[in-house]
Length: 350
Image (cartoon, rainbow, N blue to C red):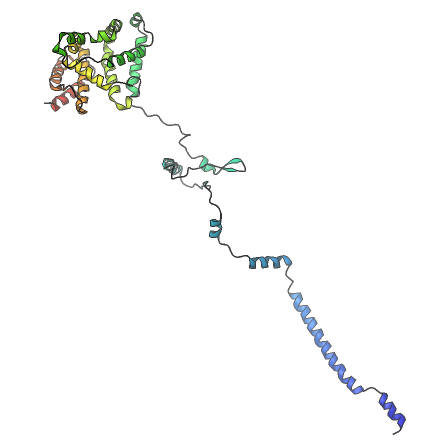
């Protein structure tokens, strides 16, 4: 071979190696292309999550779960009563409200019908505001056993003030106030009951007892009332007896500050002394029987209280009064009631 041909061959590139590398490169490019297309279609089928949802998801994963019980325990307890839902009948609601009002105020919280919010008073519930309360409902006043006798005495004294014969006695005040003061003065100076017959002076003093304590003008006025108001004496004495012997009536003007020991002394005075019996026999029969009857009841009350300190025996007086009422007591308005009581006492002390 000629040297020119060998030199020519040496300068030519190796075509065989180049031709083998090209197919390999094409295969690699094809694989990358397929992978890119696959990734494109895969990522397009699932839209990307928003940043907000990712943030929320991260917060939820980081925040621990809090139960409803833990929330209730964490909140401060309020002293105010929560709004009530009332579905019961009105009568049951009133009963429940009454029970709550009657409960112990130291152990139970009062029902609050309003709540303060932002400086304003707001109703909690319309139904709750309509509940009856003890302050809004006016109390019904019950009739007392003292009302009727006290009213009758007031009417009697008002009647006296309007009578012409009372104008002859110049009273500085109303007849009610005048006689109330006179009664207290008599009770403050009771007569002597024991050992009356030991000397003549005690007998005379008891005989003139009312004149000494009351005075001439009051004695004349009392005689005028007994003569003109004879039909009312029985009722007036009964009213006074009921008021002064009933504990509930001790606050009435006619029974306040009454000395019950002095009343007992006067009862014994009319039943067991010469001076007291003389006073009664100078009066009319009906007035005498009524005064004696209430004197017996006062001594009987002392017996029940174990306080008959003068030891007055009621059996002889009761027998005498029964005979007198059966003979001439038919004109008394309550003669049957008087006799029933006297017969019970007679049976008790026989």
